[in-house]
Amino acid sequence: MTRKILFFLLLTSTSCASIYRFSVDVQEPASVTLPVSAQNVLVLNSTVTPPENYGIDRMLDGHSIPTDYPLSMDSMAWSAIDELSSVLNASHFFKTISIYRQPVRSDTEWLSRADLSPATQSDFYEADNYDALLVIDRLLLSVDEKAKRINTEYLASEPSAYVDLRADGILTCSMYVYGKERPITTFNVTDSVFMKSIVENDSIVLLTKVPEYMLDELSRKMGNHAATYFIPTWKTTERILFTGYRSRMQEAASYASNRQWTNAEAIWSTEMEKATKPFDKAKIAFNLAVANEMQDKIDRALEWAQQAKEYLESIDSKSDSQETELTNQYISALEQRIQHNHLLDLQWGKE
Image: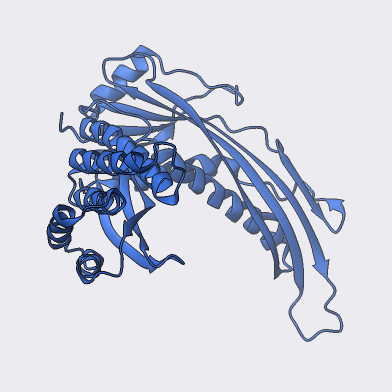
């Protein structure tokens, strides 16, 4: 999908009867702008699993949990990779996303990240004509779990336990592109998950399944976040329209609420020709700006918004009215959209 704005999601009136607020989804560029040639991406696992009990603090009934129940930490990097790859695939932003299913590193330096050597990069690029290598450099996880068995001796219920668990993580990623030996970006993603719940009082459930489930959720959550660095995303934002009690303005608002922007624009253009007061002209110009934005005519929208500001300044150049504040905010939003659209065109290969 290459459209940069999705229309109405919600239309509501404010306490002021002359303003309507509505929501639109606006496409924003990826945080990282890749070369257009980076279409075939190979995801690599370059993590090293930390020592077995690193960052793990678990208690059961006030006592440390025995080492008989180790957590499967080495699988969490693959969970992050699977989620990251799934999000990239679903975006249709790249041609292919593939996963190399073997760990890249064999050393034990689990705290460090290591750049891929040029020779290693070359081997992967040539393996199946890949253009880019997305490397998971490091995954560090910690668990703080406190579990307490619930006495059900006098209760007609199954044996249960209360679990209070927090898991924190940091995921480090790098992106390499063909023709450059150094990664074009390296970044960290951090996140946490929490659980306070009553579960089955079973040692395997308490000491293995529950914490591993939470760690898997955390790893996938960070993998999802990491994927958004490389793909345009959608952000819900607010827009407003000025309306009034005159029938034609109400009619234009009705057209707008039904996404009939050309009809609404035609009425506002006619009303602009009739208007004599700068304050009325400012509101109509603002609406014309919105109508043009909704039709993806962003440069023209900015011209109308700036015209609205000029009308307001002709009344009082130092005005701090609600209309002035809203107009200034809208001008800033349009200017940002123009900048974002230039980046989006680059990222989608339109320039």
